[in-house]
Length: 111
Image (cartoon, rainbow, N blue to C red; front, top):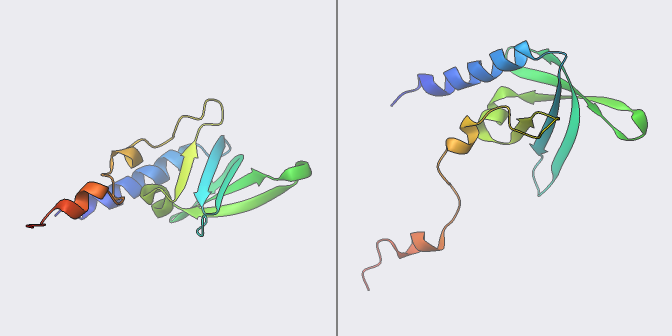
């Protein structure tokens, strides 16, 4: 089992965001309980385990939101370019489907 791979991906996310400080990005965050927040903002800081985005609120107000790199890795937070909506990190889509499938309950049935 390769325990180093997730660390490398988190480090990759950190380095890429560190190089984008001051740039614009679109954030889509799953906040739980079917609540998904989509905002556009400026990447302010990239720290060791989290990054800070100043998001545009309604009526010209701004708010600062922090997210963890691990949340990007797991897909809880999705980052994309605001110009065309293309994802910043494509390896998220490479993970196998973990959802429930109707076909999966047929396995092991010997009726």
